[in-house]
Image (cartoon, rainbow, N blue to C red):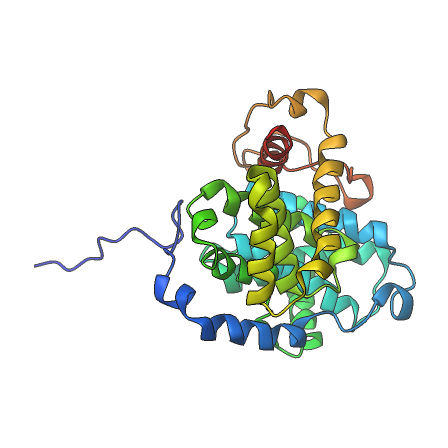
Length: 306
């Protein structure tokens, strides 16, 4: 009888793996995440001590561009967070020019997608999104430079790693899928903001979950904050400013959206590829940092409407 694999490929649409309740319930996993998180955080403020041409607003532009690509191609949640971690750590170790920042962001996405999902970005696709101003060979050279500057330490601990583990500590909240969806989006939005770069990922995750709960269950958010803060050995009162900062980020994201988007009247567009791209691609210097990925706008508006 002919043998063949009847399972769908791992790179097909839809979830690749289900949650492992054993791992999520094991406190040792959370303890290991807490112990390891300091080792893959950016070690310094590279805007002050390393980079001369790169400015904070440029980081905002390139990370939003990276987030838009991840949303457009339905990447796994971890890809964007890991890519931003690579970007920040690289900028702590290597001086670059302004014209190289978008290339760095693309290479970070390439490497993160190879490590955290079964459908990695292709070099040709990333070159397309940079209007072919960067050759595929140059992208490959920068990928080698990236792993070299990161000392091949390619398993960072990000705030996304903590979300599911923390939600298990608050069973009633864990049963509400909107909480996880909002919290994950808030984590991604926080990654685009400079204020969160040097905040521990566990603290960002706690603040994101609390901000999501505060928008949905106003009377319970303080208890959730206390429970989650205790789980990661942090002071709940000290985390309140982080929660407020995330709320401010969400509010600002809504403020820059056009009225049609605010009213959730924007129609969903199909994912773009080099062959069916419907909108023109622009070099980074013309990229509008106020654009927000469509999936994110739906969540942001939904939170503010609650």
